[in-house]
Length: 124
Image (cartoon, rainbow, N blue to C red):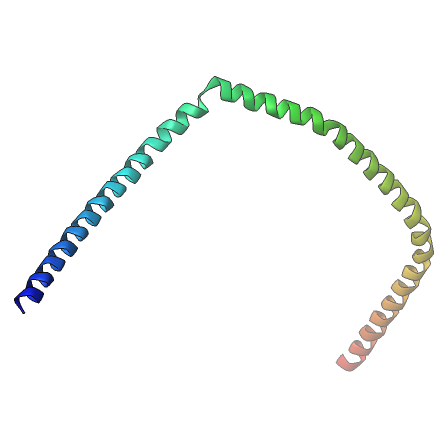
């Protein structure tokens, strides 16, 4: 009985020490992240103000622009050709549809006039 009581006390003491160590580690970790949070803006500011980085970024952008300009010109030419082709195909269709739309407009106007006449007759 005494032996199990002693073992229980030792286990509790070890557990308490383990929890204390975990709390200390948690405090250290919290302090590390706090320091990192405070230091990060300073470090980033120094990196961004670095003239070499600015020059590298400028050079990178100029190189990519030079690579993409011919592609942009090619795409513009293809879009112009597609637009012209579409226009050539739609002009005859528009010419065919014009009389149909005019006829539809006359029919709608006639229906509206009929409804007006009927509404006037009902109103009198």
